[in-house]
Amino acid sequence: MGDVKVSVIIPVYNVAGYFPRCMQSIAAQTYSDYEVVLVDDGSTDGCGDLCDQYAVEYEYVHTVHQSNQGLSAARNHGVEVAKGEYICFIDSDDYVSADYIEKLVTAMEHYQADMAVIKTHSVSDKSEVPITYKDSKNDCQLMDTETAMTEMLYSKLFGVSAWAKLYRKELVEKYPYPIGVYYEDLGATYKIMGECRRIVFIDSIGYFYVRRKGSIQHSHWQDKHMYGLKALQEQLLYVEERFPRAVNAAKCKIVISLLEFMDLLREHSKEDKKLFRQFRKEIMRLAFAGGY
Image (cartoon, rainbow, N blue to C red; front, side, top):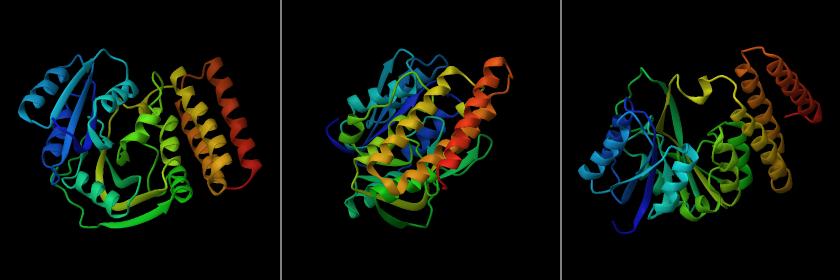
């Protein structure tokens, strides 16, 4: 494979029931100047073999295998071998519209942006939206960095997830995803966005996020969740130094995340109760530190 415009990086780990639909949506793309990098993260359910089959079936698909190291390591590995000028991530249990890549690239280049973001639609694992789906809407909103940061932290138009975004490769290389933690997107996305001068949002559904029981959002509290709080606190410091108009949004993001963390503390152990009180205290501190 020679150089291409876009590298689509798909980490794959034990999602045999969802992965084929993801790949079908990629095969249906209206855009052609792209490669797909499948990173098999030590799957044990046959997904590794599926990756190899897709690499044989489609000339634009390239597969790499690694021992199980987690989502961040898989994404970072994909970036290392990617040949595209732009990078986008798709989770292997999700899928995209047929014009997903085309709309992202068109907006990125038309507005000379450093990042393009497209609208996400959440579906249950029982739902079915055709992979040939195309949203007739194509309105775009160009933002400066501070405005985009505020929108992201308030989760108004889009969130901090790695997917549903198109990046210049050098920015993703500069800020790899932290390994061995939950909420890895929190540790990288704001840094990548902070390096962008222009961000364009496409008000058109292009990414379908599949809610399933095995996701982090449906898990119980684990020590790995603590990274989320650490990343949020670092994000607030970063925003305070560089983007003062986004500070209240960063505080709001912490409060909402703490409420979500508190909901995970279901075992009511002594340690859980201690963390619950700690999170509640932090919420009160932020609330009285200034309105948002």
